[in-house]
Amino acid sequence: MKIIGSFPKTRLRRLRKSSWIRNLVSENAISSNDLILPIFVREGKNKVESIKSMPGVNRYTVDKLAIILSKVKKFKIPAVALFPFTPNNKKNINGSEALSPNNLICKSLRLIKSRFPEIGVMCDVALDPYTSHGHDGILINNEIDNDETIKILIKQAILQAKMGCDIIAPSDMMDGRIGEIRKALDKNNFKNVSILSYAVKYASNFYGPFRDAVGSKSKLKKDKKTYQMDYRNITESFREVGLDIKEGADMIMVKPGMIYLDVISKIKNQFKVPVVAYQVSGEYSLIKSGINKNLIDDNAIIESLLAFKRAGACAIVTYFALDLAKKLNN
Ligand code: PBG
Picture 1: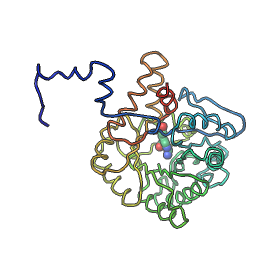
Picture 2: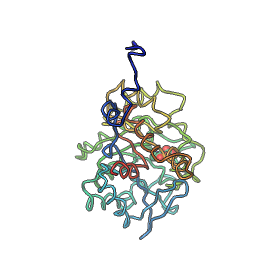
Picture 3: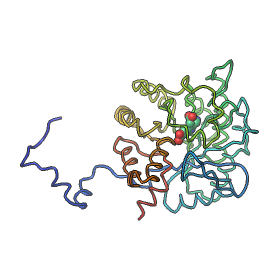
Picture 4: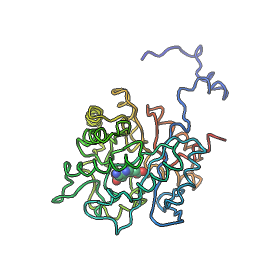
């Protein structure tokens, strides 16, 4: 790019001299329209339980979900993402609780769709909250079996769609699952249920607090590197996205977020599809603890989220969704 202008005729500070002019020339913006709030659900009644690894984030029993959903509605956050904290006695090697019509996700979907029909709901398709080994798929001979896993993911997706899920979000990173899930949704008359594929999900060290929040951390044997992406790679992410779009994904997720802005930006430029970013639990907890210790100002929240818009993301999944929406409202 050619540099236009030269000093002293050109003074870039002229366009920064007061807030009104900065607003006029600003290139990007963020609003509550851009946010998806993750919500953790637990069994039992009448409990709102804090999560040590994620200060400010709670687990809700289904009967208490209205507390947070009414805030989501009030602050006009378009959608929530549901995650279950499954009790140990309901976990097993095949994660069969994922297919129970009375699991936490199904119960929550029924509640939201009857009491808060204006809120969009996105659900993870993956088995890790339900397996005794903490992996996203079926473990056969010490390997996560791709094709056997897909058979179950299809059933999980159909069940979620039946319960009213609007956005099916496969986060398991099996090969070929988007096509199979799309086919099954269409066959079952869910042609208007959309798929947000976690197409570019890295085997990251920043998921720790989340795994604690859904109770899979202590369970997880080894790592997820045989199915989640190697963080040294970016070209590979284009292959992932290309395949998933061909298979029928409506939107693409890049995860984690803040340390993968280069990936978001390149995918947006190459594919021109809606890219959603996930500011993950480790990223959240780092910023949150900095704010709690007064090391940084809470305007850091806006700055961290605007970066995703600048990189080209259309929406952001973030545990800060309510904090940001409240801040923008003031
Ligand atoms: C699991 C899943 C994970 C997250 C969302 N869905 C963790 C993992 O893959 O181990 C992480 C979210 C976060 O860290 O905030 N399918």
